[in-house]
Image 1 (cartoon, rainbow, N blue to C red):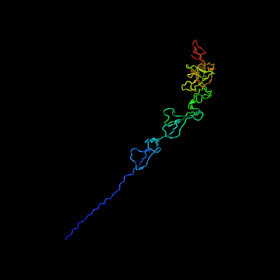
Image 2 (tube, one colour; image 1 turned 30 degrees about the horizontal axis):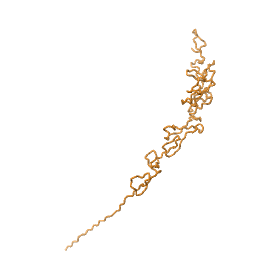
Image 3 (cartoon, rainbow, N blue to C red; image 1 turned 135 degrees about the vertical axis):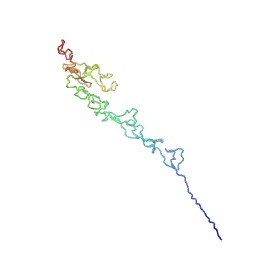
Image 4 (tube, rainbow, N blue to C red; image 1 turned 60 degrees about the vertical axis):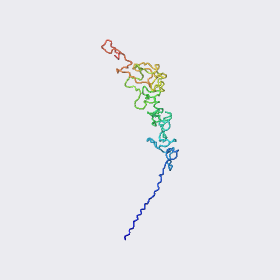
Length: 296
């Protein structure tokens, strides 16, 4: 007798249960914060709120350390001088730095005459690019715009005997406006020429001077003239018609003045002053030969 025992297979399926919870969210829930986003769902954890004065990114590569302003706008920090009265004023500066100022009272308060490299009343003022430059390039202690350019050599015919001249030239170079009378040219002298090229000198009572105050408003303070003339020029009443001596040189008028130039007295180089020339026939074989003639 055979017995059959059924094999009972019991399969037990074990199901493991796992508890799944929602991910915790972090963000700013404060509506007063600069980075609060209206419409975003509330965050589980209120964090990361930024307020005025906190760092932000203004997406401008030329600025640094940007911060939120009181209106929550992101303001990039721009360092520069914030004083509009300064030469290097930077109108968009938010972080103050050193300012440069021109000399307030040239020739009195400072050793140098510092001026701004840009027009402080012009459109470029405020870009922060202004720098101080010296307005005393010849280092004579007088601002260049107050310098009276003229001869300061007391041996020259046009030496500024009244000491109006403060510099030989604007930049203190080697060139000089002095009229040095050539000692080898015996007929040369100091004086002036009129529009026709006729030499003259100034009267001893002359008050001819530089137009230092730009009386005629032409921007030229170096020109010479008689006070009260407009345009500034030498009045006829200040001119002395020259009288020449036997040596061919003037005997009257001021011998030296800041306005003088060197007058060439023997332009034909014949050994006789141009102003003592005697015109006549110089041919000894001619009937009208004049032995005193110096110019044919």
